[in-house]
Amino acid sequence: MTAQSGHIASYYAATANAAPSYAALSGDVNCDVCVVGGGIAGCSSALHLAERGYRVVLLEDKVIAWGASGRSGAQALPGFACSQDKLVQLVGRETARALWDVSVEALTLTRDLIRRHQIACDWVDGQMHAAIKPRHRRELAEWAEQLERDYAYRSVRLIEGPELGSLLATRRYIAGLYDTNSGHLHPLNYTLGLAAAARRLGVEIFENTRALRFETGRQVTVHTPRGVVRCRQLVLCGNAYLDGTAPALASKIIGVGTYIVATEQLGADRARALIANNMAVTDINWIIDYFRRSADHRLLFGGRVAYSGLDPLNTAHATRARMLGVFPQLADVRIEYTWGGHIDITMNRAPHFGRLAPDVYFAQGFSGHGIALTGMAGKLIAEAVAGTAERFDLFARIPHRDFPGGALLRRPTLMLAMLYYRLRDLL
Image (cartoon, rainbow, N blue to C red; front, side):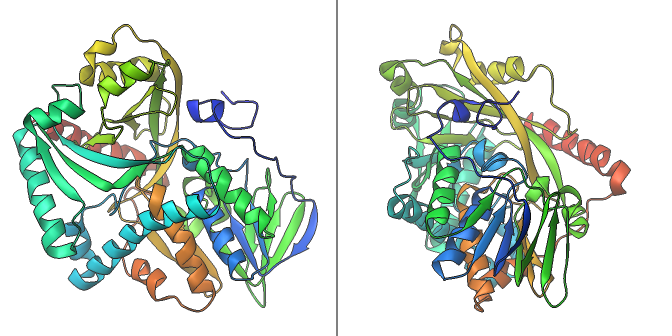
């Protein structure tokens, strides 16, 4: 179902700020850099490149923030979807620490972009990872110790007992790791704000314009249904929606469905009673539940992942059931919005950045952990295009494998692997 704005019908689309529509490309255009993809990563890339004086064209297949950037759970966190221990295994301790520092800077950048460009997107400080069982509590305690010891990250603390009960009106969790440096926002309004800021700096934005293919040579030529973009450098930020535009990238990611519901308005008092300090919350099961309050006093709750690539018909019912597992006191509350869409994941859940050619950059594979990092990716891409690629290349060091099974069997193979982790959540 699609809203009048062209976005998937969701709570975010229903509460989106007024934003212009952009024409489709018709004819030929020349620029310094062409950016493909109108999500956070693409809009941030365009904005940071324009700030450096580049002539930028941004191509979006549908409308700005149509994909995951405009639909997500919207929790802005440091780190990555994979653990820091996994990164140490992949790239070594020194590079893993440098990557962590970039992810922390991503949070500072998010706040800075909101402030500098006056983006009305309901930013709220605070996020907690929640423990359901004693094993989770031990993991959170070890994580807090590791963050301070190895990464000098001191904004987290373990909360449990009466204090936890005073913040979160549920008996499902026994402890939580609370981070004052993380936060949450309205992701569609944030992305629309980035696009507007880029446009004010001269970026040409074209919606409903698919990048069909590109050719490299003395210049890069990007073909669209009704026109051509000629540029010196190309940036690919389409993630799960690139499809055949860059076939070389497709084997490293796979799109999985995620689903969110929004309740009817609860009223200020009832909403505050659920989450007293308005933090965002996510548990640490493999198949996670995540939730937060909205600015207009609803509960937004996500808790399903579809590795089959299909949208389950019972999304609203099943996600509501998970919500009631956390907050049974909401049994009388109506679900007003249900939506979902694809995010891209990598085999190791680490982000996948690199180059397809010296003049073709890409950033993908945020694996559900991209609200802050996608914005930072845009800044790193702009640095690399301008000739300072050290930080971008930190990410390019992360090795990535193809999903096994080829085009036909990769999804069934993934579903079997995920069944193991679903069973592990029960232990």
